[in-house]
Length: 425
Image 1 (cartoon, rainbow, N blue to C red):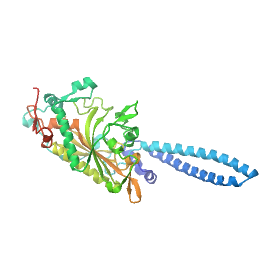
Image 2 (tube, rainbow, N blue to C red; image 1 turned 90 degrees about the vertical axis):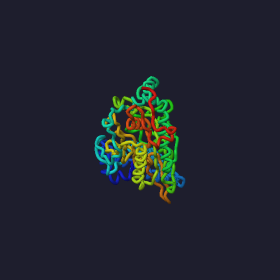
Image 3 (cartoon, helix red, strand yellow; image 1 turned 90 degrees about the horizontal axis):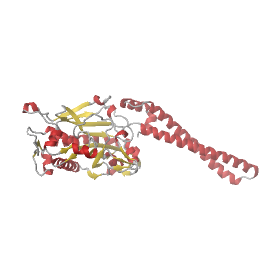
Image 4 (cartoon, rainbow, N blue to C red; image 1 turned 60 degrees about the vertical axis):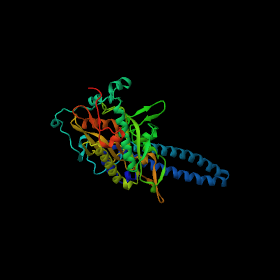
């Protein structure tokens, strides 16, 4: 959530952010009104309580008619205090409810617009000309079948659409990707983490995934637990309700976890293969930093993502995501999109978001710097979302005979293999 003081001091900035997101601007005025009622009712309650305490000191000293009058007044005052307390609680609850609906403030450099209004910042690598090489590229599912690596038919039989098995070298390729990604993150100073896949509602809400993203979340009603769509959630909640010493920052974690997404709004999109699925594994980077360091950390996370995709020898571009396509927690987001030959376009492989103080305020995570205690900044960045990375590797590194070149960074984790060979013709 945002700082209420900032809302009071500069409501136009908050309105502009909501407008850029394509979200309800009237929410800002509703929140200002609720906050004013919360503060005025709090003042009223404090005044009545002070009067009540003062009256309580007079009653024992009084007698006769004076005491009776004071007792009568005390009774009325008690009722007024109770009413003021209820009014204060109601106004506070309304303020909190509205505050949780408000997205993070959009960074001023973010391009304004919808999904297609991103700005391309960089392009890396060379897109292969398969025509010049003399063959038509196969898509990842055809390649995965030839390699004995992907089985979507049995995935659908066992679990339904958008589920799959990784088999044989496909399973080994996932493990190679995860191990190589964790190795890079560890070398960069991240602490490796294996995180829970089920979290409590306060963890999910605190990271901002029960607002606009709620339709894509799996909920276990019987246990009131949520399946995470990313290890960002448990990594953000890891220090929930804690005060961290400033000299411990930055804290950087690399979480590996299964991820679950309902993909509620994706009917008809990417139905072939394993590009858009309900369950996948991912290595996620997560940082806790001082607020003034968040933009620099955002660039560092992006550099680590670029390092990873470059090591896989994938052609990719970096985009500055437009305001209307940001998640509610993100002030700014960069995506790295890899070229997918059979689709003839770039598709998202990694993203990194600067969430500033938004999540830490919701999760009550603060930093102690001398005598000052204040919220800190959180950032997240995908290092390796496994299925999409497999798609990009198979399609970009395929050979005419259906074999697939293995980038050197993965070879130590694949028994030294330089090529993945077809097992079925």
